[in-house]
Amino acid sequence: MKILITGVAGLLGSRLADWVLENTDNEVIGVDDLSGGYIENVNSKVKFYKFDLVDQSQVKALFENEKPDIVYHYAAYAAEGLSPFIRKYNYENNLIASTNLITNSIQFDVNRFVFASSMSVYGDTYDPPFSENMQQVPIDPYGIAKYSVEQDLKVALIQHGLKYTIIRPHNFYGINQNIWDKYRNVLGIWMYQILESKQPTIFGDGNQVRAFSYVDDSIIPFWNASQNDDCIDQIINLGGIKEYTINEACKILINVTGSHLKPIYLEERHEAKYAWSTWDKSVELLEFEHKIDLEEGLAKMWEWAKTQPKRNRFVWPNYELDKGIYEYWKDK
Ligand SMILES: NC(=O)c1ccc[n+]([C@@H]2O[C@H](COP(=O)([O-])OP(=O)(O)OC[C@H]3O[C@@H](n4cnc5c(N)ncnc54)[C@H](O)[C@@H]3O)[C@@H](O)[C@H]2O)c1
Image (cartoon, rainbow, N blue to C red; front, side, top):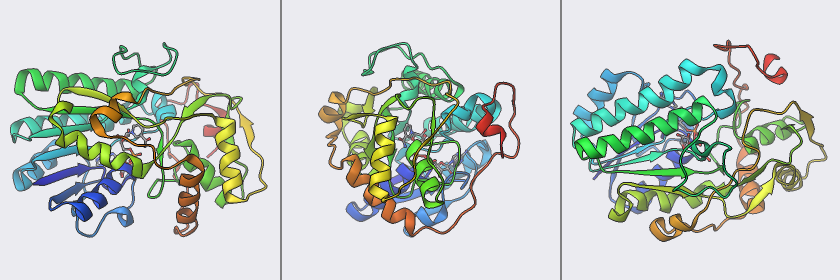
């Protein structure tokens, strides 16, 4: 079979590609525009295409050439907190790029479409844990884009028979993560800061609650999502069996790295304060197992981070909207 993985240079996509190539006889076709991932993450056996999925004609040409059997759609810019300030980019990159892929998956008879949605679709209306049957009420453009793609997939199944599975991952981290982007993924941001001997930054009081999972614990569940027919037309949360406050998570990382730096507290952000999800459905349908604890996972990631090239920190040259932007993002 031909497996197409978008976002193959990113955290989740690169690790799934490695696993598929090492453990199955399937061929992996990968797409990434390298806007947020690195070519060094892409397995040399991946047939790699570099382009932006917003370009419908290139998506079509890819499907004409490769005719994939299964599509894993990971490509997105997952800077949730920044998404209100880069609205057009967010919707083009996270929504239009996705519909381009869905259109061609319908046209070229893809057997299964697995979409990496997000826990952000739950917003802050409910008390956690968030379960799959709760109505989505996202609170920012990133979550709205994910929600819209979910709805588009439902219609694509009803009208065109595209068999999809929606996975809502929750705070995966690990090797191959982009730690150079100043706007996203709290553990990556802290790891970069500690590597640079800078104090780790916390938005607000640090009492926000999240659960974290190591990237390798996502691989078997994502693989099963396309292999198990019971997953068709299903939405499944993935990750996070143990909650931590952001203060606790920061302390663990500081201990793991042996650093003596202390966190500094910045202006709070517009975000859900308490957010974690149920995981029973992922155990039942995807065989999810939380194998790697936060301490162990961060230790692996720290060892990897120390071997990484010194890259410039990614900073947006211009925001689309600077009204209401936080002080710490004004400073470039
Ligand atoms: N990591 C998590 O915990 C988590 C949580 C919730 C949702 N997700 C979702 O899972 C997916 C993968 O997450 P990740 O952590 O691996 O992110 P990532 O940033 O590491 O990987 C995304 C990859 O997509 C590529 N990309 C982005 N826009 C593109 C475009 N228009 N065309 C081609 N390539 C493009 C980037 O260059 C990057 O390599 C994303 O859709 C994200 O929203 C991840």
